Length: 203
Image 1 (cartoon, rainbow, N blue to C red):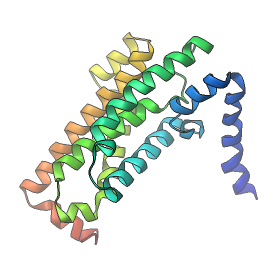
Image 2: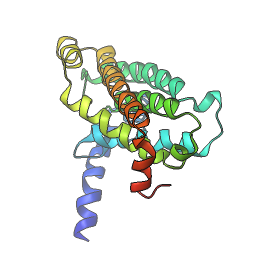
Image 3: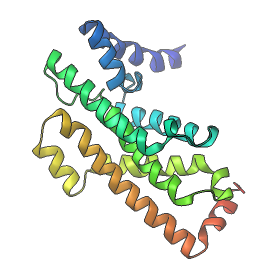
Image 4: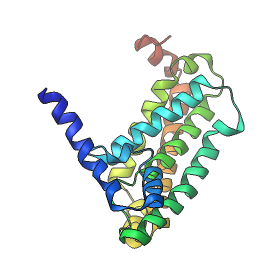
């Protein structure tokens, strides 16, 4: 009973945000919170990123390649949809970057996974462990999104607009994607990728 209260009560508390908006505002809030994943706490950005990582992985692992499940198109779609939705919310409440807006994290996650999934291609061993790639991308993205090194942090501090809200996570996603591809390349170059998967008993 206590565990259920600890888990459910914060979620119910954040859902009260919907009461602050009109009908369209509720719709924009649903989008900006990436289907309400940003209403979870603590660390809504982590919850939103995790939700996006799961959706990204499911699209990659359980659907046939098509335009509608292309990870890069999802990145673009989430970026512009998030920019629009967050702008509409800002017009209603004046808040530029509240923690519960996590569609920016979702766009960043899809960018990272696009790079990682593209790098491994149709490698049958990595296809079996695609969930590990998505988890790897999730961890990398959160590191860059939280630490905000270099230009990512500068951009986040310098600009306080709904465009910046979305774009700094794209920068974090790009940095995480680059880092992830370099690591995967090094593993493959030295022949450690298969050894790693075997050690984890994934192949």
